[in-house]
Structure formats: structure tokens, C-alpha cells
Image 1 (tube, helix red, strand yellow):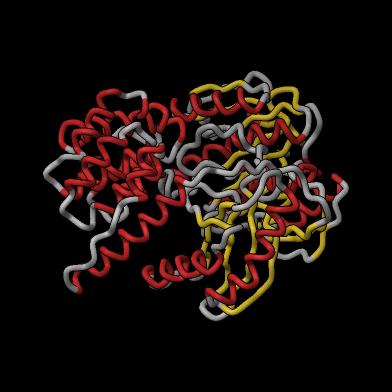
Image 2 (cartoon, one colour):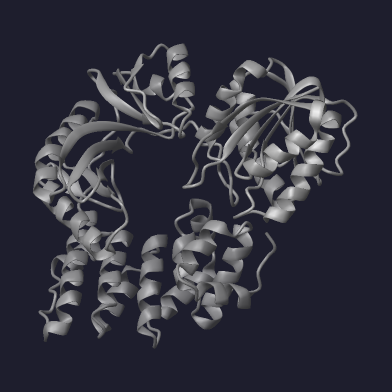
Length: 515
């Protein structure tokens, strides 16, 4: 992705969900941060984007080290624009800046009710004895008229959340499951069989296998996380009516039991509520989250949506809900090598499952090439699956190669990367395997650019892959790829194809032999 000018960034920020889209999709995050910081310092613009970028730890560290940016945050707490004051307070909280005095002073002077909740929450995030003492004595002014009732409620809720976050934190280290628990593992769609086979190799028995999940019963949580073909592990609680009180009656005892049995330290335990219902009225959804959190909260369970140890997941519809727990006190380090990603980066659990699907066609000590390696995920997972003689990544984007090199070093995998167009890339000796997460033609590339790349790549496969070698291709452009494979005639043989799901899309996996 080319770098945008500040004017282009400003235009995109004005679009619906502009800050979220830019933060998620802009490839060069360092460039985006530099320009957004400059816009904020000079014009008070891009504050919402900076708040989004602060959610990424490497960027948050850079922002905290930027003295000019921090000075601008302090200055903008006193800005003429109420919206800028609000967002500057949110930014101070997101960065946990040492601005207790400045936030208290700004809150004392703030005459706009919709700004105060952000300043209160920022004080809760920044923390410290002075913030705690000030907020304990803080009184929310009653609404002067009906138009202020909403802001009164928001300010009251912000104060409660901030005070909860300022409570002394109990340290709760995961010590292990004392008895077997049933755990539901979420798998890439239609690739559950690959997860089941992996679990069997690790000595776990699975059951209730579905399109995108299966269950196992175990007390060995660290051992379970040796498997790589699942995206997350959830502890099922049961099914109830979608009612806050019903959910709390079912969920709260299970949450307390899991936290108490598997952790050191005393209650209260910190939780959050995650609502995964079909999209509907946002206000109603938010109201339901608040009602559930309020009903679950007790002396043993503290609602802490920004600093939680366990998540209560509510899935289903407006009538019935399935309840799950997800532990955040247990660290999932399987994919910790992904220090950075780029737009359309492959989910590592999907990459692991795709390679498991193709495992019968892969060989030990293979020479492997990825012609569109992106951030290196597919190639890294191939190196972790079985020993490889060599791993080679090619990508046309310099930034992608930089990210791939950083990720690969963290993974402890030996791979070489080069910036090149695969259609111009020359190899002196064909590879045993080619693996590729090809551009889908939506977030990266277009249908016409995909057609040119796919056609050229299939034509060049016999040069890149030795006779009898295989190519594993993962793409959303499956109709195009099927046609191009047919056009290659006897040069290529389609061995297998399998549809799956990723981010609402339905890509397909192709396994091809080079004849």
C-alpha cells in the first residue's frame, strides 16, 4: 500500500469508521503514526486515530517517548474544542501518561458534561493515590434538565469504572487446572478434522466435532496449547435465556469456581462481558452488556473491561444465549512471533490448519518457497510443522519483507526473504513445495491484478517447483484459479480443493501437483 499524504489521511478520517479502518489497514504503521502525530500537534487533528494506534503496544511505546506529542496532549486538555479536550483525555488514558494534576485541573474547569466521563476514565487509567483520592470525593452533579440525564448516567458510570480500576489489584497467577474441564476449541471453518488429528497426536481425545469447533476434556491446559490449529479455547458454561439476571445466575458461579480453583491469590477476580449476538441496535446491545456486567458483579467478581483476567462470552440471539468463559490469565504464546502484521495477513491458526490439510503431500527436509509471503506467517508455520531444508519468502513490498524478517527471527525459524516480483524471480534450482496466501482481490489488489498474477504464477510453476512437487494455494479468487488450472492442461494436476472461512469470506485451498 502506498503512503498517504496528510491531506488524504484527513479525508479518510472523515469517512464513517475512518479512524478504525486506517488503523487496521494502513500497511506502514510507523509512517501513519508520524503523520497523525504531526497533524495532532499542529492542528489538533487525528486524535481519534492516535487513540486507535495506542492500542498497538509497539506504537504506544513510541508515542510515550515522543516528548512533543505528550506536550501537545497536555496543551489540548485545555483546547477550545470540547471534542479535542475529550479525545486528548482519552489519549492520555490510553497512553497512561503521568498527567494526574493536569487531568484533575482540566476536570475541575470542564463545563461540558459529555467531556467529563473521558477525563474521569483517564484518571482511572493513569492511576495513583492522588487520582484515587480525588475521585473518591468527586460528586456527579445532578441533571439540570431531561436533556442532561444521558450525560449524568455516563458520568456516573465512568466514575464507578474509574474507582474500580483504582482499587488495589489482586495478583492472580494461573497455577493450573486442578481437575479436568470440558474445553471448546474454535477451529477454522471446515478444518476441524485437522485440529482433531493434531490433538490425537498430542494425546487428547476430542468429541462433539462440528464445522468450526470441537471439544475435549482435560486438566492439561499448557499441553493443549501445543496444538496450533485452533484460534481460541473457551470453557462452556451452558445455555440460558438472553436475560441479564438469568445469565448472571448461570455464569457467576462458574467464573468464580474457575478463577478460584486455577489461580493463586484471593478474590475479587476481574472480568469483562463480550456480547457476540447478531448485529442489531447498538444502544440495546451496549445496554445489555452493562446489565449483564452489573448482574454478575459481586465482592468476588469485579467488572474491569480494560483490565480483565477472564471474559464472559455471550453468544446466540435475542432469545437464547450460549455462555462461555475465556481465560486471559493463561498466556497463549503459540503465535507470539507475530510482533507485527500487514493488511490481509493470514491468521496463523488458519495457516497451521491449511498445512495440516496438505500434510500428506508435504515432505521432510523440503525446500519451500512462498511467492507472496507478506508478514511471513505461512512460511513460519511451515517451518514449525516439520524440518525444512530451506524456506524462501518473496514479496513485492519492502515493508512486508521487513515485517516478515522481524516475525521470523522471533519465531526462531531459519528463512531467507527477498524483495521481488515473483513473475521476475529467477531460481537456479526448483523447489519441492510452493505455498501461498494469494491476494484475494478485495483488501489487497484487484480482480484484474489477481488475474495477471495468478496466470503468470501458474505458467511459471514448472520453473519454480520440481516435477512431482506440490503447490498449496489459498485464495478467494477460486473461480479464476480453477479456470487457469484447467487452461494449464497436463502440466498441472489438481489433487485436492477445500473451502473454508476467514473473516466473513469463504476462501478455498488448492493442492496442485506439478507434472
